[in-house]
Image (cartoon, rainbow, N blue to C red):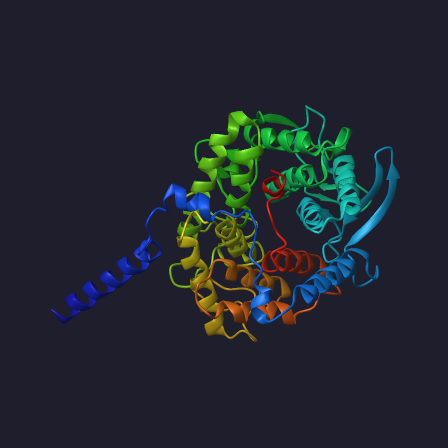
Length: 430
């Protein structure tokens, strides 16, 4: 009898954990959501007693260091000459010795948020010149190669979905903030083109430059209304929680191609549900790669993708930014409280970078990138501990050295988010 009672208690406990994300959750009223929607992040730094002037000075100093600082150990932005469309520049991943669509699109997002048009245009020009596949017979036609050498030679010709998502959204913001130009600087036309490929690109089988044959179709599953891990082959039926960007999908549902707007609204709702499914019920940690149903996926070439690692660091920023901008799913507040509670228990000055989903430390030391992402969770968090995470970010400096690319780009995105400088510029222009 005693054993039966123990098993019953265990069962009740398990059910409680599984239902925790939905406890107290009620679907927001449409009117309230619209009233609360701001399309911009809150300024959490003023809560630390910082003045607007201090915050502005810090952002500008950080930007100047990462984009125009010493070439050997500070900057990630490198000018690369000119072509018929003007200056060219790229964001360099120092540690991996390549240029990534992720970094290029992040760089463009940072530049548009801080009104750095010349840098934005130089990055965009390099992206179109070297990354974009205009050949309609190429399997990745309409997409951007995700990894190239600084000289523009592809290392991997296939796309990475987060790069495409950030490219499109940064271009919509540029169109709203600066207006459209001609050719590649007709920002909105290019953003529309990217979204059309994401959703409607036909399956194309063709050869890469190295002779390898690949097939690639759309980057969003029409059936699941969910971003794919890749458009290529059997791995296209997987996803990555850090690629889910419902805050951006809401923008696309308003300013993207009209025929697809209902789909993007659906995709935003699906991604909000996906965060709840993918996040561990006790720690709030999400895996690097996942199945469409939220289960972790161990990629054959990277079995550790079931853990909370480098990709997964960004997921809390994605759900927290969505809450800050649109406030459509209160479960995102619970998710932020949960993940911050976990890292707070681990110790703000000693938590590691890599974990199993249930919270077992896998080492890695402390990373500026993860400190930055945990600070962005404060945009949705409700517990007073959220200020400690913002303070931890403010105490950090813009990264230097060997790992300054990933640490630096996530640091800049976090600083924009917690300072109130990250916004939907298509709303500002109305």
